[in-house]
Length: 636
Image (cartoon, rainbow, N blue to C red; front, side, top):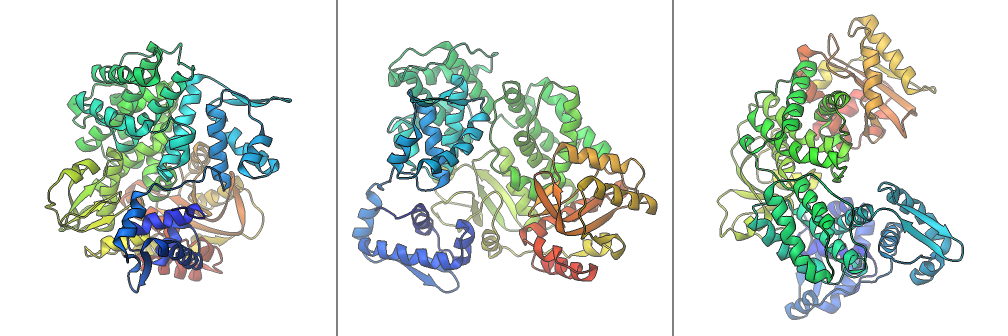
């Protein structure tokens, strides 16, 4: 069955497995509810020929109704007919990158424009993003008159760039022609999947689903590059664990007949290094032997205790989780292996307190080490620190319903989901967390219900699908199975007041704003002279923009004598790096009231979830601001 556009194909895929209301569909596809209704009508016209129809059940949503099981079964068995022509700018960028990364010859935009039925000017516009993407990997495109454009760079960079690109595409759609026809040899991913799984099982190497997918994509890329005469050469790395070395050798042995060429020792060294960098280590501290990891964990936990008054040093679970992650992280930063963190933006918005604490600790440690730890790696560390803060500074709830968590995207994600569930639904007890394969092997489910990060077939208990940072709809589905304790909005009464509220309607830069607010707080005795320089230093490390036009400037550490939030509304906006802030909350938090700090951050997360920036910005005075804030909290 051929769909007129990709959104209809995705809509059909979603509604095959779930009954969803139009509001949730509109949120997922970033369209209006009117567009959803139009798409449903178009989809029903297509499905009419295949014995199926989408029906709207009031109170539940759109549900797939199968009228002719025979014709519908034939539809599911038939392979989808993909159009190998990119239709959107994003698709064209992906296709252009694939062509440059896999072509042995120069490419001309005129030829591609004719092939894809677009103008050369359109492709020229897309090339800006293509060059930006390639520049991250130190790859460059050179243009020669009459010959066209050709990619230049190291073989390691080309393979890494192509694998990262295909990984991103696979996350969006595993049936993309780029995966099956354009970039990789046909059927290669299917061939490699059982071979890699058997290899990792044989050598006791645990991989997350994402890490296994990345390595499978890399092996498929390597097979093509080797077979086309582009071997990896002149690469060497220090020795890794015996099981990672043996696994790499085993994989190389079964890649040889597939590639049809001799495979060099450099290929094995690079594969060995990536297996070591992406594997999931055992959680037991006794299984970890990394001096650098120990020193970094000690430094981070000591810094957090000294500067933020959160004592996490005696948490064996947190220490074990951090050591588990940092051992492989140090291998990655040493060899500049970058693992993308697709949840980074969400981590900043949903764990702002933990992000600030971790960023300050890692930035301070970075002054004494040659390693450069990027934001993606910091984001992974934040998940562990955030869980530790949740475990020790947000406790006291009774937990009743037993839940089975099905998630195979890594230990840090599991911990994060558990913490988020307990924060939103404190009654919940996560009895166990297992992978997708372990779930399918189970004959029955003992827990009360299942929460999964991917769609599952129900066994004998209800299944709720939940993304790592869930939508409101997903949380409502969980809420139907547990009683929800709602947090009272006492933070507004305690930390926000008329005296520390102002509206700025004239142009002002960020530093001038900081100076004005900090001077005022210093005159009132809330902070001392060290506060303003610390606010500037924190802003210089990474922008404190939370998102949606909301910024949270603050100091490095808890430097205030008394906790207060200075609220600033800027209807004209204040330049905040590359973004613009309209609602600014300057946080001055003291060590004597540090436990309330997490509650204050939760308030700002609520503003984000409620998309309340515009309403807050347009408030005319403190009373109207407080009314909007209370309205947001009342819907928690």
